Image (cartoon, rainbow, N blue to C red):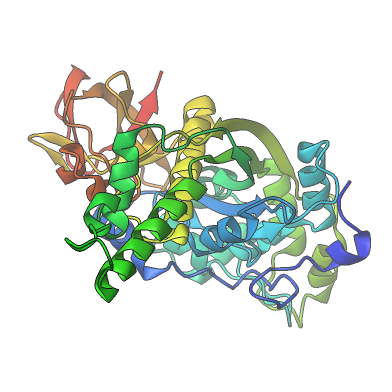
Length: 439
């Protein structure tokens, strides 16, 4: 069961102790700088090749009675939306349920009661809470269109008779996703697993315990203040490491897609879309009253438990939680993309000699992965289509380790600048062609 109806009539965004209502589709969670160095550079690189991305809203289910819930919640709120998606955040990052027996039912009920599908649509059209007015600025920005707002508005009012609006709906709004991550701490024995891992953690924190724990003086009668401090620090380090020996996160990710087809689009454009709310009050009132048109379709789910990893580069408990959490969520997103073709991301080829793209281990790229190469074609009416022109595969030993904090682990792959590919079929590839994983 979802927690008390009164509480969820105005969902809470847990940030410190404040409880606030969901804002009207304008608040964007800004990335934390230290989480985004690689991400920002990568996103800037990709911006050189304009292409349509899916739009993503992410939330997590919190479990206040479980260990490390607060730490995981803090990390999750700081995480940016993955760079290969447009940020479609609604201002709420965490939700809570009283009963976890049927989490999918809980999430679906939450989405229905809060009319999240309508909120996602409202964000697409930048609906003004005070007036009920819409605009198409975000559509044009994400679709890379030069058409003026008036042109798009007039086309919309003509029953979507132009291909540009069909394109906007098919390639943009239709690819709007809501992912809810149910994150739980589980203790599954020795997380560090080996003496080598203990040494890695110790050295990454403040030097190995053996280096820190100095011997007593020759007479054995006393230790210097420095020795005592070092011994205390070493014991603290070992205690810190011991605390995380069983640290595991179990993450179940539920994927939903905004339903946006011709029927929904036509109803919205004809009956509700208005830029002149004072003159078209019936449209404003109609949109407010409609609780059935906009729906979220359940696509599927994946579940993983975090695996053993090196803690190189971590210095605090928060660092460890952050590394485990981010990598676990990246793994689930990659699995969702493997499992459900409609959710698969596209990335541009940045060079063709050699073939290179800015994706890698974070996206679960392996030697067995295969990618179709897509030429982006725009016709005279502005409609975008994708023509398959070939297939490529990653080169062994040239798969970029772009996972969070991989550079701190010092692997050869983390020093690469993108993943290199070799041709399987096709030819005459050009920089800017898109690649998409295929089976």
